[in-house]
Amino acid sequence: MTFKNTTKKYLKEANKMSIKSLVGKKMTQKTDFMGEKINIKKLTVAEVTEIQSMAENAEGDDNFELLRFVIRAAVEDGEELEDSDFDEFPLDELTKLSNAIIKFSGVKGDPEKK
Image 1 (cartoon, rainbow, N blue to C red):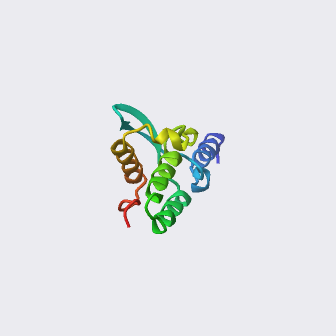
Image 2 (tube, one colour):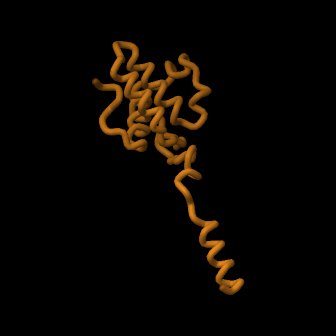
Image 3 (cartoon, rainbow, N blue to C red):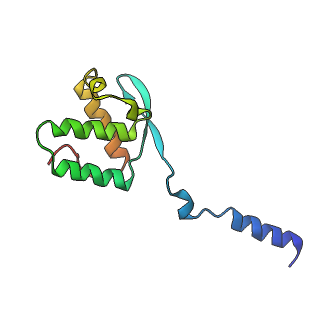
């Protein structure tokens, strides 16, 4: 085998992407929120599992806690939001944002509904 062929083969192998190397990679997109574009990320399997568990056990005000969890998990800088910050947003805008996150993440159905 020549040097050129060896180099080509090495580069081809080096450029292969393994699934293991994608662990932890974040996928994002922009979505509308209150007339502005904000970045959301796809939820991980662990986050979706936690949301589903929360939804199964949700009663009354727990639905709002679930909404806050979804937004904090997926919105850029969302973890910095205090509970009181959510009180300052229109509820329908928060619901639309949560639904956009759920849809982008590939989750079937609405986690806020039993």
